Image (cartoon, rainbow, N blue to C red; front, side, top):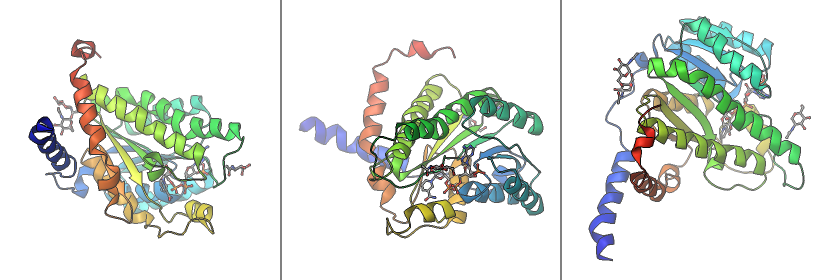
Length: 291
Ligand SMILES: NC(=O)c1ccc[n+]([C@@H]2O[C@H](COP(=O)([O-])OP(=O)(O)OC[C@H]3O[C@@H](n4cnc5c(N)ncnc54)[C@H](OP(=O)(O)O)[C@@H]3O)[C@@H](O)[C@H]2O)c1
Ligand SMILES: *[C@@H]1O[C@H](CO)[C@@H](O)[C@H](O)[C@H]1NC(C)=O
Ligand SMILES: *[C@@H]1O[C@H](CO)[C@@H](O)[C@H](O)[C@H]1NC(C)=O
Ligand SMILES: *[C@@H]1O[C@H](CO)[C@@H](O)[C@H](O)[C@H]1NC(C)=O
């Protein structure tokens, strides 16, 4: 008990203060001339991120499956002031496409500063019974392709001291009935990308990883999926997209965007962060000396 009083509380307070404060302010110029990939950019939050980035004067390469929609988004990006805007259409079910997409995007922009991983396979709210194939497909598209894309992008991101931005969900931090495969894929993103963030830190790789934990957002897909099933207020996709870009530019570890201001405090899990901090202390750090 004495130990608890003496050390644990101050440590808790320090961690909370550290995790919920930033000293730097966001400025739109931070994105000016930056080379950014956005996946799942044909509609929804991805499209809104592409528009914000364009207004801020970034170079963008967008992807999704629908060529027609991407074409329209790219035209709008150019009108909004993108330094350049291109699209490459394809499906993230295909890992060869995922890998080649990053290489081509890198060539189009002459490098890469930010990789925004946002696409998901279509999801409907249903009780899980035996649809094993949907679990596999969801893990492939929502999780495995993110790993492939980030591996392909890492050499360019190392050169630019760049950023990986992973779009997750409240369902990647807590349980919601009716979306077991989706939730599994979002929890997997936290496990994988939070681990490699720690590894990058320990091996002096200066690539930031921002995990974005979103509540219900008013995209067509989400509104259709929850209609008649979940009754909560959705937040606006335009503001959501902006908050993601701000957090990414400030190289935050996590961004919470939800209609309740209690969410980051309740889901931020300082206990986990403290345990992670002390667990790393017990590692032989020579293992990380070379990368
Ligand atoms: N909206 C919400 O309430 C909410 C809440 C929490 C988290 N999120 C997260 O926010 C992100 C965006 O959600 P959203 O609501 O904006 O989704 P959305 O409107 O359904 O957009 C999904 C995007 O992914 C693309 N896509 C779908 N299947 C694909 C495939 N097989 N290969 C490549 N691209 C594919 C879609 O374009 P094509 O169909 O043209 O391929 C589209 O551009 C997701 O990571 C989601 O989990 C959303
Ligand atoms: C996703 O879309 C495909 C094709 O439109 C459909 O066959 C499939 O049932 C949908 N999956 C889910 C989980 O909604
Ligand atoms: C990346 O950061 C390192 C310090 O970590 C710095 O020496 C280097 O100049 C930076 N490179 C770029 C391209 O910003
Ligand atoms: C990492 O890169 C960023 C962006 O270039 C830079 O601001 C930061 O100082 C670098 N951090 C370290 C530890 O070198």
